Image (tube, rainbow, N blue to C red):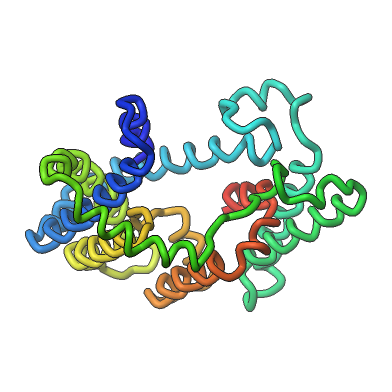
Length: 290
């Protein structure tokens, strides 16, 4: 999606049109995933060798860890991951302290209690550490232009709902040729999302001694991505990182995924002002601890 957006920007496409094309791309990719499931193509995941899936997961893990290193060390955004390791004088001690406390608490907490997931306690410890540091530095009590926290999310319920009708009308007004030109990108995106989901399902089968239905997974995810894009969201997949965190936090059924989605929606729409204070280093610490 990012590459697609950059390409359109380089072509001089107006931002409003890019947003519409991104929404249409998400809708088309979801529809393609539904077709994959109806055509029983989900069974092809059985022909992917385990070392390939394992190597893929390992590569994803390395990418995630390295991408979070600058955030954990508090270095400038956009810095290549290896540069901060070679320049310890650029590290931010506030970020290091918050990340260290978050990692330690999230690892130790499961040994003390199973009632509250270690991830939650780790984030809470990171937030408390941040405000303890902020009490000694008044500048940290400002949320705007503060690199140590997430900052305002900008998820206003009224504005989002008011813009949906206009977006749907504009989507219907896109030229047919322009929509047809998106099919190649939609096919690529659908394949990537499907592989990501199915290899995560295979991994989950091995961890839980269960057996998933790949075609049902593709149809369900295609429906979800189509509706998400129609409502202004982005298409996604079942990824290994959140899945493992969900499993290690005590999840036992698919209901946990549904609840996670609902709680994320509620948090984005109603708790944006509170989530703005989440320390970036705490979230990076959770990724490394997991």
